[in-house]
Image: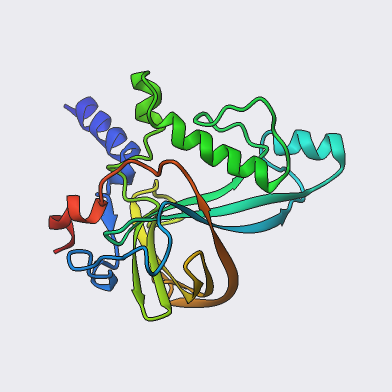
Length: 237
């Protein structure tokens, strides 16, 4: 009996530190049931991206470390990517660079350029339709995972984008067992660009000023997934 209890205790520690996955700040969400956009406001047949650079110090990640050692250049170019859908759904990718060897975007050439990062996005979009079941499952933008999924609302020239990030509820002990909400606010400049002026982290109620320009890039396809919030609307009641 004691051995069985010990085994159950170890399993409990392994699975989310005995905690149940929790989605926070549901009361802050944009109304996803009565929300829609039109292409008259923003172009939607592609994605929006913002360019940035990150300067690495010690212990850079794999592939980037090789590039720095070979070239002596430690400023790496990244793009942040946001897909916006007509029903107000959003898929936000993390910062993508042109050097990392992503499983879902294997390339012939890896360069520290924005265009190489865009090529990575293009390959990710193609790989989601792979005929190989394992590849399609891994590269299908995780339709049942709330991480990096969000909502957008546009009023006049104001744009609000919300998205969830998967984090540890207790940073010192837990696994990644919680989804926390973030909110970007900005101004639409044209049907193909907007500027983000602030970022709110609801977990800490911290608001940071930003001045990040997102521009439009047309693509043949987008992540082929349903609106997560409409699909799982009972979780948000």
